[in-house]
Image (cartoon, rainbow, N blue to C red; front, side, top):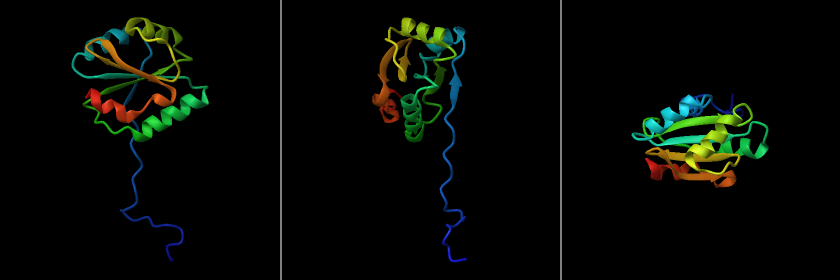
Length: 128
């Protein structure tokens, strides 16, 4: 009536679309990641679904991420369900395990990694 409860016009902000995460669930995907990283940067986000800090970092990352999906490929690794893959990621890319952790892969090698509150989506722009 008087706009006390907000308006529903077209100027209302649209909900941000979900990020194009690909679940990292098999060892075979690691070879594909290495190969694909020769043409596009790959990001692996290692997340512990039972950790409040990890959940907060993931939410912050998703809310500030603003890179077109054609410029970077995102992988999500659930540490609790795929610990063996997490171990292999550390071995293959020579990165000590942390949780949460973000790893950037280009040309088959890890070129950057961050953990906990050092994970910032804005930092990824320098890799595209």
